[in-house]
Length: 77
Image (tube, rainbow, N blue to C red; front, top):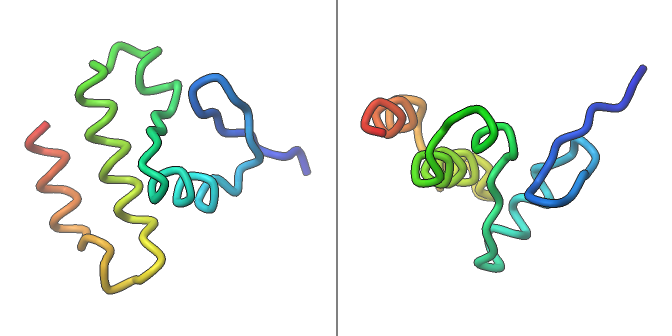
């Protein structure tokens, strides 16, 4: 099976992006998927989408947003 690859600005990492994204998020660095900015999504919207995605990766499930909250945030972009 071919390994999937995901991209962070300037870097290629194995698909297990959750750990990298969480570490980056909690160290106050910024992670935006290259596809968001390369397909016409504004930088501001890309950052908001990334923030939502990273919130969904919170190590404590009780701290993760509900799907309703995620959808509401996405609708308001």
